Length: 190
Image 1 (cartoon, rainbow, N blue to C red):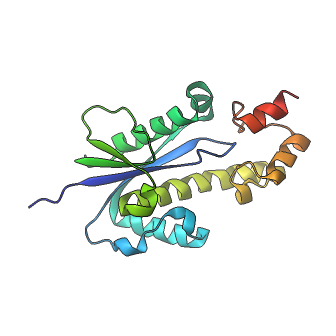
Image 2 (image 1 turned 90 degrees about the vertical axis):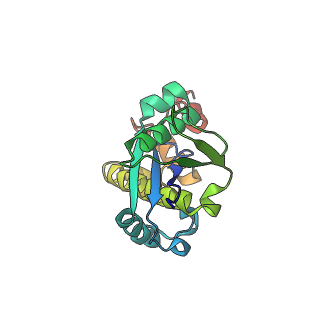
Image 3 (image 1 turned 180 degrees about the vertical axis):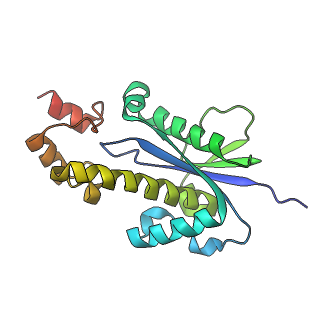
């Protein structure tokens, strides 16, 4: 009997003040060790990178993103859903069921989808997607931080830490900052 093809989907960077939002979709191979795969937030950076390679080798996977312009136009929730939609559509194999982390589902015709609250802690496919989304986005942020050393993005991933907000006040808002996000907006409107 054919096992049901399940894809897990998660996003990364929704709460960040900078850069695009990423999403990944993953269909795990049956020979993968699901015990190894945990929610990316609980893993060290080094561990996430090792697992990312392992997952990519043993799965169908894809990454989608939504740009700052899209985030500012659509709002972050809709931009996250758009990134998810792009990731799902890029999968080389069509899943029978798509499990989405969180409480919202992207609008996508001809796919059976279900959302799962805290899915990244419960469903290996979603955990795998969270790892790939986060590692992919972190690579981009690290690259961006080389050009903008004053903001320490490689450490704070663009989240609104006190140190990051101090840097924005001191060195200004860059083209990578999401201008519609309250902390950035408040600094700009001063």
